[in-house]
Amino acid sequence: MAISANEIFETLGMIHAEKLDIRTVTLGIDLHACAGPDVRTVARQAYERVVSVARDLVRVARTVEEEYGIPIVNKRVSVTPVSWFAAACEAEDYVVIARELDRAARDLGIDFIGGYSALVQKDTTAAARRLIQSIPRALAETERLCASVNIGSTKAGLNMEAVRLMGRIVKETAELDAEAAGAACARLVVFCNAVQDNPFMAGAFCGEGEGDTGLSVGISGPGTIRATVQALGREADLQTVAEEIKRVAFKITRAGELIGRKCAQRLGVPFNIVDLSLAPTPAEGDSVADILEALGLDRVGGPGSTAALAMLNDAVKRGGAMATSHAGGMSGAFVPVCEDATMARRAAEGALTIEKLEAMTAVCSVGLDMIVLPGETTPETISGLIADEAAIGMINGKTTAVRVIPAPGRKAGERVDFGGLLGAGPVMPISPHSCAVFVGRGGRIPAPLQGLTN
Image (cartoon, rainbow, N blue to C red; front, side):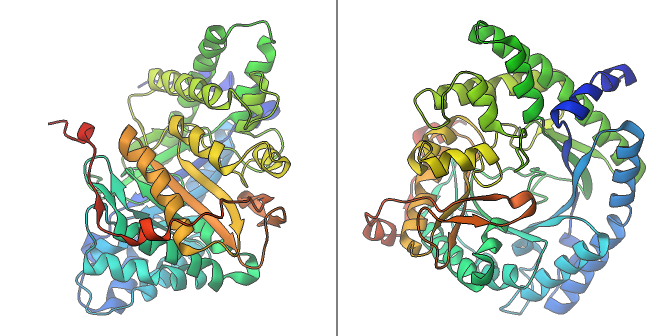
């Protein structure tokens, strides 16, 4: 698809005044060829392949960024789920692979590497179980490695054995990183209906059906959308607002695809997809919550919040889908609490609760994201949150996820600052009522009838 330079120049005002950027370029790398019986050899080969394929990623991204004047915030790599190519290893512990992947990320100068992952939506293989049980140590001993586990899907139902296990894993991960208030949990996400080509962390991996390599781009632009809504004033009806959001999303997506294609061409790898998601940051003015309040909400979390988010999400998708034939990933609006300054404020004020967030995630991407929980939160309660959010994804045929941080020693109402793109936010209260018996039943919640689509 030909993209003219004029279309990019039209976005310059958005870049300078409204915080438009490319949130990430993510290079997917298949590591199946690294499989073998010796875990140290597998780890070394994984390191060597990642470094060899991605050696120019940062340089190329910076060059393209300078040429077109569009900031690229993150440079990342995603790899084949480790539980797949490590399955032939005779070792019981995969942490050595985690360390080597993290070393590759550090040596490349990239921000994150994703793919310390397992897909267990129907049942759990021995390799997947070994990987999942190693996650707390793997994240505690690394800085740039991201982990993800898919515990359900619309086709398979929910693997409640894995849901129960992940509650414990999240809790253990936080406790091993207690000095940093459990920040390692920000690099761990639990999915339902995980997508194979997601460029965003912590859930990126190079999934089934992907090629040897492929470069994907994740766009952003909450500030641009907010400015668009504000410019229309309070008199514009919602259909007019939606149409204008579509128009701006079209421009943002075209710019994102151009940048992605240029990077892929210079790296000598195929261009993969554009993820249309609106991804906020802790920076003021770069907030999805600000868009919703510009639409007319007094406070995000109040009545109307879910409807406003549904309209925003749909308008962004419509505009983006018109602009590219390569839309993929999750392509929606993210509502991470700590990574969105206004979301964090509304949560601290009590306007935004976990229950309201859960309702809002039924109409957007991705789920209960970057929420700090009291340190005393039990593994069973975390499993209950995972099950609830996964059920929304399973029934509605959409991707949902849970990325929560049970901050050791912290109580509801306290504030935790993780720094950088992880942001800061309040410890949010959670219902004290137990779901331990329900979670403890295990087994599998069967796939819903709408999963029988063939």
